[in-house]
Image 1 (spheres, one colour):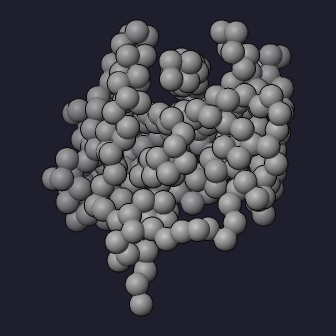
Image 2 (spheres, helix red, strand yellow):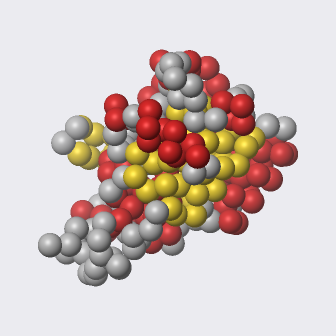
Length: 254
């Protein structure tokens, strides 16, 4: 028996895709932004300039998709579910609806506090310690971010005057199994953060040929022997406007 982790290439075709389950919507915004913080999404959803334009459906319930007008451009946005499989499903479905460009941001665990502290993180590659990416891209230890997307993100951060750091992230499926030995191992391999979606989102966006930008912000600190929760309890709400507007600027620059 060979699992997806042992296969040398992905298999085709899929029995069904999101294009079979999700209807395309005419005049849907080609640009979409998403994050994992319900507080951030609700804050922007409550603005007078925002309207609900669609819903994504799962057994967890309906997930509203909103539209906002930003600098004379319509941008869709919605709440991504936490974890690689759920995050990728939402992405697949908005692409089927009509999205052509996608920006994602969210919190991460910090593995190198000296490099990351108070900076926006640009993932240049991701260690594939999750399962979803292996259904889209052939097995490998890591997956690289698109160089053009990284360059665009850098240019936007520079123009906005935000400090940032580029580096490798470690994508894991199990937040409660970030063990000290593996944390130390990943840190030695050059990982500066740990997240739960980046590797999978890099894989699916490459597979679907959708321009994709992702940036991270440090939440909890895992760089010492004692865990520090930091901003994790607030889910990024402290800097909600900063992160969301940065995502909007990135989407316009793509």
